Length: 310
Image (cartoon, rainbow, N blue to C red; front, side, top):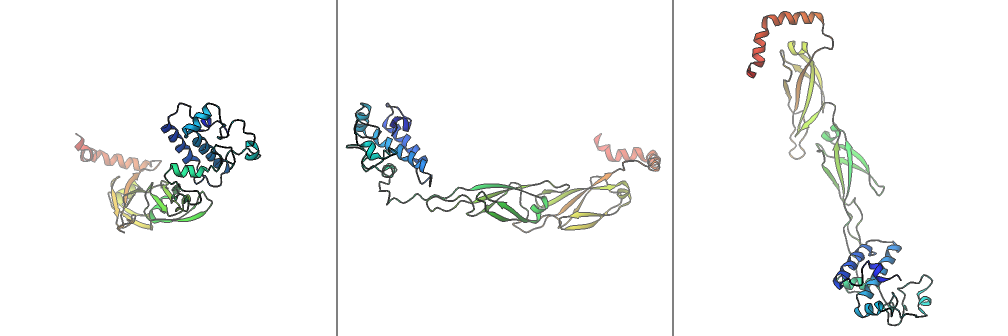
């Protein structure tokens, strides 16, 4: 066994309280219940417990500091130690040395007594601890978020699940999958899987509360003379009637064409903002007509649309 001071990372002058605090921290980290099926960590737990057993005993500590006993508590020069300890020199064997703590020493008994149990290992129930939650992120399309959909996700344990995306799910909203997180300890319940939703931006839709907004480009002819335009909604295409003399920025409301509120089941509206778009190449006849029209009405029109600016 190594020098117990090195094992615990303390000095000879460390107080009894600090020694106990150091051991508690290491023992909680290395305990077999926290590291199932890990023999290396289990051996470290035993080594740490054995070091604490020696240094926490004032008489044994004093004898060790004077060089009278070995790190495992056996007498200096005890010829039978290596033979009884076995090929690996296990300091936890049942015959570590006369007067030492090796005889019958059990790291679990020490751990139990220090943490309030005080029961033998065979009788001490394993700590029951709920598993941790595990967070995953998924990206979905705008329409899938508004109307609801299914999404497949692969968990860290390799399991594949089909997730039901609720209608009108919001950006950053989490979907909780019960008992699909990390496994519990000592028979404890598994944690949950938290699926965090991120929504891809749509080409022309935006969502505000339960209402859908979009800009609709229209021609100058449609703005002046009116017309019928086929536009998309989340439930399918419809024909929208553009009134005569429609200004750019005019907003038209399509009742009941928005998203459904998941709680109240009330359906929002779709708002269509008209945006007058001039042709890329202006026709000469159009220019002539505009000039002819503007010479008669320019001042009046400017006053009507910008007079409030002073």
